[in-house]
Image 1: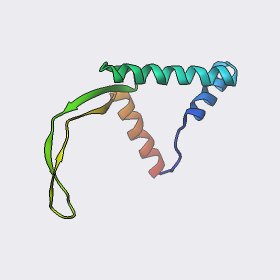
Image 2: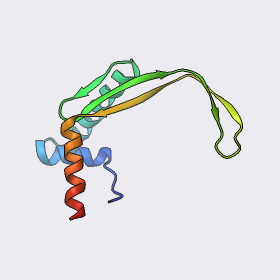
Image 3: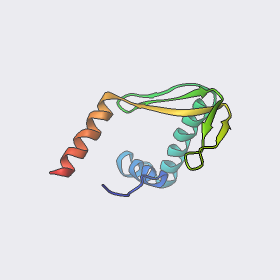
Length: 103
């Protein structure tokens, strides 16, 4: 398993190489797409990317949690969390990627 992280710069570079936009235009495009996704999620919309997955938000109720180290109870306030459900194509691709590395 590699410790490589795909960054915004990596995405911009891929757009530059594969689409043919300038580096500056590629960076602007990637930033715009990510900003649109963020804005949609912040306003409570789902974001579905075909062949990749679905991003959505979910509201969680307040509850009482427990510190695993001390056993002390602590209140956990209500919050909104981000969820991601990968598509079946993405799941299959990840499984196939792991299988090819083991051989």
